[in-house]
Image (cartoon, rainbow over all chains, first blue to last red; front, side, top):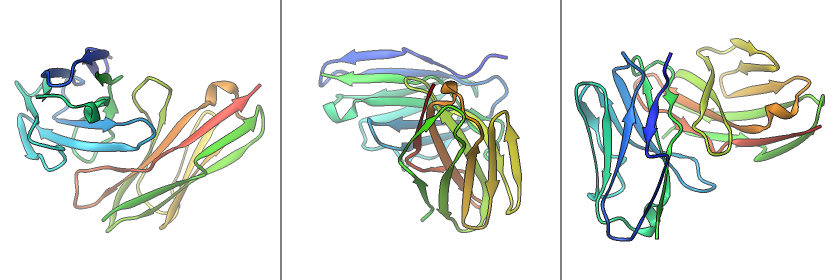
Length: 113
Length: 110
């Protein structure tokens, strides 16, 4: 079956611009997660959705970051007024439930110039 | 706070040379320990979940084991295609989050 998909695969933007990253989870997966992976760093948790609700937004690095999920499916991570330190690979994962394995998408590589 | 430490950071093996990766963890009640494989430029690929001490799981040349303090990923007679970064993560019984280790990068030379 289809796995988690993310778009775009690569995004280059200028400092100060806004960007939107999209995630299509595996069909039927109610839980969705966003992570960030910087060069040489481990996976940093950003936000978790159960259905369309985000019970925990504490991992978001600043108020420039926001995310939403609609229809219990597609999720969008928005970064406003991008900074160079936002450059990283943004990974999305989904799971059947919160105690099931996460299945990751290929990631979006964001470069802020 | 949950902690996951993986060692070594990097491992270079000759094809056919078996070895083990270590994942040490501290967690307040383990719900599950997860192993992932990550190839360059790709997202992590799920390998195994282990739930209780003594449990073992196998997939091709990989075998994961679990004790109360650590997990091992054994690679038997590795091939160059086993080259990747292997990530370990733990989930506490009362938490939805996974805490990831920094990973072990395995390079297998032909």
